[in-house]
Amino acid sequence: MTILFTSSYPLDLITMNPHASVIYVESHTKTGGGRQMSYLRNHLRGMPLTLRENFTTEGHLTPRTEARDTLLIEKQLREIRARLQAFVLVCFPVVPFDVQLTYLEQHSPKFSKFVSDKLEQIKNEYL
Image (cartoon, rainbow, N blue to C red; front, side, top):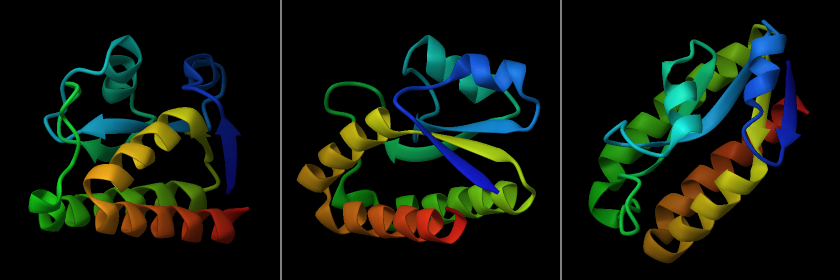
């Protein structure tokens, strides 16, 4: 029931600790993002949080897809809460999420506030 804040994706931690999971920034297309994304996407203990449409330079979420994205984010946050309640160590890489939330504030402020509020609730609940 612990959240571990890290600066980046701690891939070595989930190989060393069988009770650790890592939240990672996912795209709606579930492709791209580099080696770390591919590794976490295919690992049982990687937990996606969809904050991009795709990993291109213009692949940010937009207000047009808020309804779709809201349902998906809520489902993914329920999974994160379930793991926290199951006493799994959840790693939250601060820098990648901070970058994505900054982009969301610019392109979809309403959705950015929704995601920030939900993450804040989880943080307050499990710290």
